[in-house]
Image 1 (cartoon, rainbow, N blue to C red):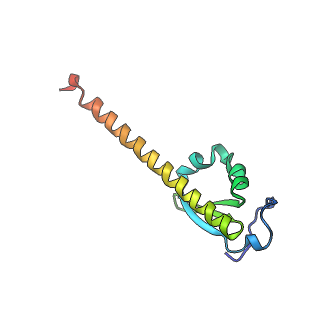
Image 2 (cartoon, rainbow, N blue to C red):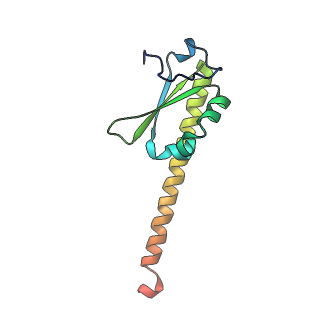
Image 3 (tube, rainbow, N blue to C red):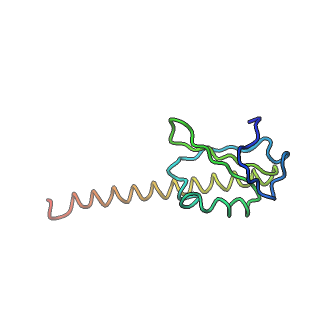
Length: 116
């Protein structure tokens, strides 16, 4: 990642160019993005401000993954990466639990006493 980000509105808490070098990168399932960042990424500015980082999202071609690139000072970007990984895992587990509940409900409908 030797190039600087394309984004033009670098937040004031991110010091260019030193905080734009060596970003942290993580990959998240694209379907989790709305749960993590709100509709159309509406929570991204808040997350950036609180975390003192700058985020860039890049949808990976022919993949169900999105790359989240975290820019900022060393400790802030590591902390933000950890937080984002935790959020993604929590939302993935919630989605999985929801699917299991749906499967159970569908099985219960199929095996109801009126069906026996």
